[in-house]
Length: 284
Image 1 (cartoon, rainbow, N blue to C red):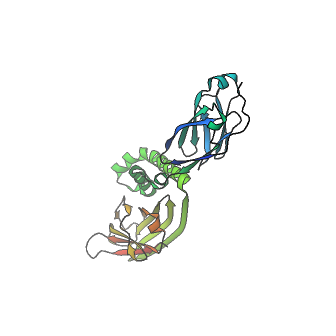
Image 2: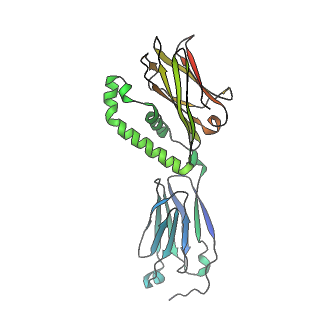
């Protein structure tokens, strides 16, 4: 039987989480008198040892504590076992843990997993499209043929949009700026229903309503901060034609949070064509 006289020196390893599935390179040596502690940026759903005969893991909130199983087999064979940690937002972190042959090998007591810059701010193009669709498309207001094709897909789009939003919020935080405001010009109403920060981006949900004749067709949409135009924004205008029926049509704006949340934000929606009507809303 191998007896260790002195405990290993405490040490911490920092791991940057740059993608949803991360493998910690190399192996971490663990002694029988040690506890290996993982600190994650999100709550942990489960921790799964590759071999429960070698390694045990206990979960509490965003912390996982792993230790070796005390057995003659583990002491004699000094096997290697995988440990996979799954967080509530779907991220997976995997490492290989081996039994240390000597006390001086077991130098790591804490593994702190931090969000990498790319993971916290990156939004894939597909996710942007899903979020736009979730925020602004209403099949009931689309053309009948389009509505018929969209109806079966709407629950799936909404589910995916919520799932992506929840994952991104868990990693990077969510800040909602109340901005339920409304203005009108020539009986064209423009309303804001909130501005939210998701990671490095901000989403603004607007509605355009026409209470006048003739119909209003959305043309140019201008976003300004401190009276300066913001160029790098994405627009979702699923229903540009706004008839004079008093029914709101959705419009979503997605842009960099550092621009949209850093000053006086205003959005102008102008009618298509030269000399068209325009309405401007001071969002914040």
